[in-house]
Length: 345
Ligand SMILES: NC(=O)c1ccc[n+]([C@@H]2O[C@H](COP(=O)([O-])OP(=O)(O)OC[C@H]3O[C@@H](n4cnc5c(N)ncnc54)[C@H](O)[C@@H]3O)[C@@H](O)[C@H]2O)c1
Image (cartoon, rainbow, N blue to C red; front, side):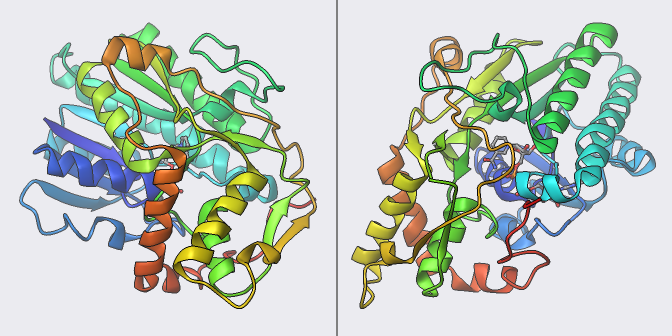
């Protein structure tokens, strides 16, 4: 299959690109190369005959038309987005521009392309979204595909809006769509502004490890390579028009996650004092959702997908990867906003 992946130089998009190329698909990676992008994420496939890169913005309709006409993909996997909640608090405009207007522009370009092709049933527009669109859970319950949307941050509101647009294009124009809503990812190539890499890198540098509020917030952690596998499974076998929740089945409070990572570093890179001594509680994120948990029954029973690693196994691999890849993360620490507290009112 020939797949156009948007956002393929980012964290999850690059995992999708690497896996799709390894599975023998032809991949066109379309990415604007924002602050969050890193072409090193796809260096392992850059020279392959079944891989191409196009630097373009999903808000640029002319560029999208040209790239679609040139590469003639069988499917689009849409991952390009502004993705950091804290940045969405400081500057929501970029999130509306890219996540809402950009998705609209991509949908229109995809529709025009699909209609020019004669509206093939086999075409897919696969929109990759987040569990954050469902809002915040209390101590019990899990999100299913029918949980009402209740986004509470500019980021999750912009993703919810994009999900609605994608469904509307499926209903109104019959565009063959798929949606997935996934929980928090972690793993190799995670940009060093997100919780897991921040903990690893601050601990390695002997810097305070910031934990928002009391660290009670619960997330359902999914190893990024398992997510990429789920996405390609849905693309290949998902039912047109359907959405699938993707979770790791690994709920953890932030404070417990941070302590686990510190424990791994104590084993693999011992310091004079335990790394956990660096944990510092800081002001909470405004509107910080308490708990997300995913019910993955649909993707599990209908498509036979389940995660391959536990949180402990995935964190072990992730810590080992960061310890071995300073050449990857060192230059990223210089990027705008990295290492500073964002999203405080
Ligand atoms: N990270 C998570 O835990 C998580 C969980 C569930 C869903 N998601 C969703 O998965 C997708 C990928 O997330 P990620 O963590 O890999 O994000 P990321 O920030 O690491 O990567 C986003 C990529 O999109 C590109 N991009 C941004 N704006 C663009 C534009 N206007 N045009 C073209 N490219 C643009 C960036 O250059 C970057 O390479 C997003 O849609 C996100 O909402 C993420």
